[in-house]
Length: 582
Image 1 (tube, rainbow, N blue to C red):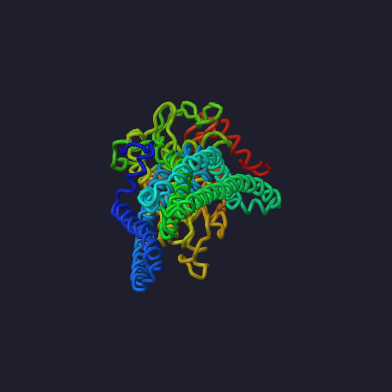
Image 2: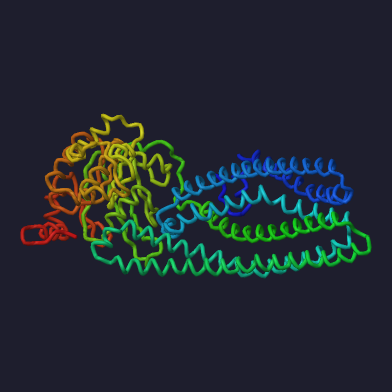
């Protein structure tokens, strides 16, 4: 496994595939900058040798040279922009891909710690800041120092007296920039944190928009969003104010420097020590020096902002996945499942175990229902089998081997999993089913839909399986989403099928046909189902009853009726006059 990204220089590896653009951009920029340095000297010649001597031929010849140099400079600038854009876009694309892959490797606990909103802004805003940094460095990093040093040398060669005000102004500009940066850097950091909160709130509201509308809480959500948005705006305004005052301060120093130089040049002109063309050239070079200093200042400021974004990106890239691949790359030998004295508590919880000393074994091809009160650990048990979390104590085995010894792809590739809250993706119904196995044929997709009892409602849509699904599957009913999710799991032909309350929104008769279809077509598949209804319980080979994180009973329906009081209470609660389990 590659070492984690922890230091800023680790980001340079993402520039290596684009090194040719990184190299070409500065060369093109040097052409542009060199042409800019030559222009004042040519203008000096026109004034001092052409205009003063009324030499029209020299004026025209030098003018054409200025035009040619301007065109060459424009070509260099255009090429530099193209090369730097290629480098920046390639770099940004590679970093974004790496961060996205890193996010996918994170455990549930790590994702929750970062928060979805923060991960979103890191993938978008922070990487965009780094892209702009690459573009700025490849285009401007050498340009500003080249113009700065080149212009100072040319001023010194022309008249060293006039270079003194220029050299004295540089420390003033440096002091101004340092003062402003000391206030801007904390604002950049705070703005990114507030953007995280705003992004998280926006995602939360959009995902839960139906709940918001159902409870008529639009105004309350709007007020909460407005508060977060206002906080972002306030930070942006404060940073913008500092930006707005920095530019006039630097411009003031620039103009004062030019005034002082012109004042000194006036005395030298009266004494015949300098010509008008030389003064014009020096003023142009001084302007280039001052602009180079200002650009360097802003580059330094943006680098400080980029430093914050780089840290946030590297925090994701440098986070070791909490669950690592084991050495086994082959699929489990069979669908057997065994828990040996397994205990588990969620990270960040009060420390009270959700599962306590669980031990049981399920033979391959067995259908087992898992039942218990809310909070008894049913979903947690499923999560440990799929290794979404690691057991704190004991051992979980699949196919006779501990789940820790499998590569995650090998372990989960042998499973079909339907989560408690099914999630569909933007695309067609067929694409969502085929998402379980990309190489599935149209016939296999249709067969999976039929077994999952989804074929009938799919046939009612005008475009059948090609019908588009809105984000999150909001255009479908709860039962329809569940059946498509089950079809997506079945198309994998899994050794183990985990159904976490996957038929809660399906009517009993449809559920009965679905379970019969699974039993008929997937005879060798081990099926674990978190269920609530008695009708879903009795047709299983065995029933696992959880109570307070412990096993209260494990056996057939008839055995548990005789030996397990919690099971009898669940059954009694669903008899006529009782209430169904929550």
